[in-house]
Length: 111
Image (cartoon, rainbow, N blue to C red; front, side):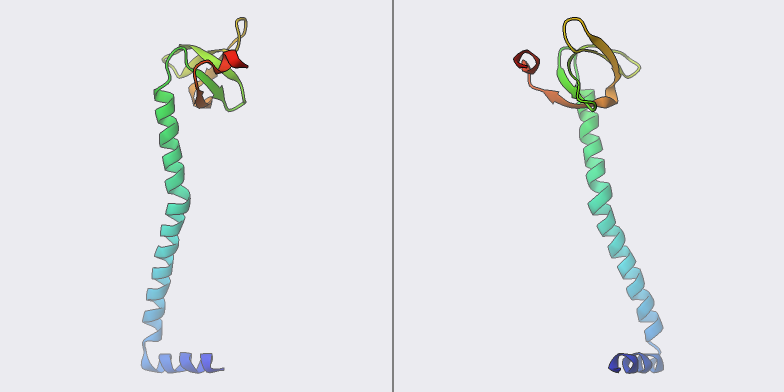
């Protein structure tokens, strides 16, 4: 009950509407900042790390793809594709973006 009385007093003083709009703007800004730092910023960081990984690939690197294929890079084409050697007889072309991580040298021989 006292909550309604405080609102009535604030309206009489004429400060309720302006302070209410400022607090609404303040809350929206805080919400946007939290949204940015919890969603957009980590994704941008992850994208940057993946781009650096893709740019650092060279022939002979052992990699894993998004589909779980393990292989050695045999050839990197200029149009964004990689010839991936899965074993001595099997080779596949994949898009560079599908490389997830770089494996240590000798991983394929140890499997």
